[in-house]
Image (cartoon, rainbow, N blue to C red; front, side):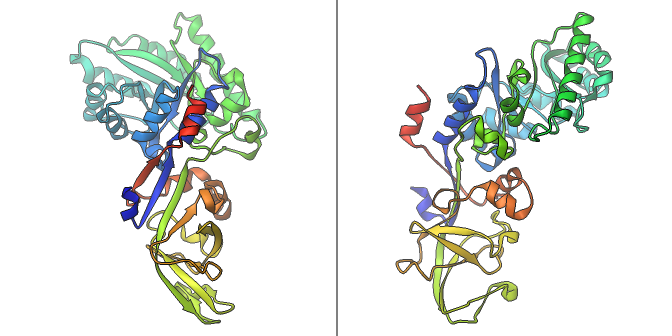
Length: 383
């Protein structure tokens, strides 16, 4: 395989992606669509391969953040509906959306009027998705102004309302007070629209956490992100569904050396050998997405054995303690994350005081994505 020539790479188990989509779909009724969120290169997993796997497993929509992300999927031959979750304002962007059959999010009247003006020469309306701010305070029209906004868009012949949606700020928390408040605002606005004769063709609200927590929030579609990649937005959500992490990060050993007791390892000598040791240098570092803040705080795996990372993680290289792995040699593969390492992005996030989303998105593109698939998983979950 190609990975034999790589110094370091990210390995993606597409059967795990399919398994996770199938598991999430089992939480839904047959009338509810699943939009796979594949923005940020599918959370670092590779957008094209993940999108194809998710669609094969039953997803019907894809969600991305930017127009180039959507164009990348179209150029790969993907024909499923693609929602652009980010804001769009320029004429060139709007023309690209129309040309590539993407579906934009519109957040305010000014944006709607710009779309209408730019698209005035097109013979058919394009579907647009209207976002309400019900409490996230990010993108979207204030829910109290939403009825007038929707009435405006409804009257613009170049725009066809494809859906109305909002986003939840605290769905992963045990206290559901704010989530319930957002739901009430959302439903109140939808009811007000129906009262003036506007019935949205599709409404959606759920991220992974919300779809697992409350089936009443599923509506016409859900938008899971993290769950597709096999991770849970919060520990208390593990009871709802069985997910499999899809990512492993691997690299090769480039040197093995012996050091005597007291030897300092790496920049700043943040680690000193307590005894005579054997140290291996691994060809991966923080420029690849192994955060420097993990220095001296994680275990990795080589030859099926978990070993400690030692010394400060550097830009391109990381040192590990292989004293008790006598068979180790240059060229051997080290699993940095996932698999035999026995760790997930959640574990790294806990050490770093951040979230697993940030860890996953940190693996740089100089690490090739190598896609694998386990036949027994695929056959088990795609029947």
